[in-house]
Length: 113
Length: 113
Image (cartoon, rainbow over all chains, first blue to last red; front, side, top):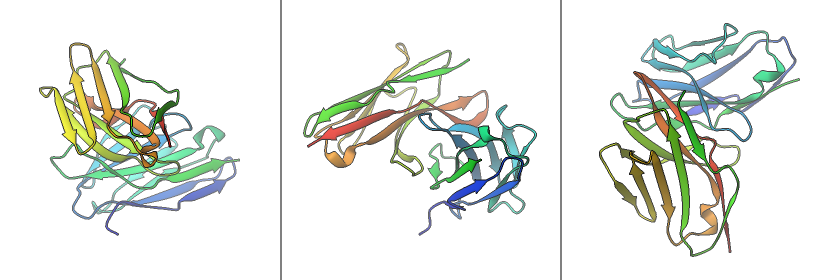
């Protein structure tokens, strides 16, 4: 399967713990996006990479959130000192350089207790 | 701020009929609009993209219209099938140079046999 993959698929953590999610985009795609989705809502844009450069960050991305894409391939999203309000589905998407179409992964569902 | 409105209530359609979903937006002039399908527990899947200078786009049983004067897009599924049951998301380009998509809340479509 050459689609976007995300790991883990599910994560349960206690409030105050740090968590890290990984996204492996489609290999030919140089653009990578992170979104957050809560129940009954559409995905909300968090941040965007073109190759290894992080070019856009939403106001939703608080100081506790950090994303990296060190070699322009896979990306990680870390949440420090998790809060119950961080509970959501975290989606990763990728796209070709000149395409508006985004291909989404299955998401990582985070539950903060 | 830009706002996207989709009928977040479930839409029940009898199998074989045409389902029509609405996406309205305000405070924005998007260069394009996209429709995605999302099944429970999965990431969104791209269906169609329509640009601001296009009135209509078709793909198999799907049709999208885009009225930039009314600031509205209509998404039609003809000859609907139970397998079409899902949540359908409308998404606009971020605007202002941002490449993240802005999504509506989605419409939950139920096709009844």
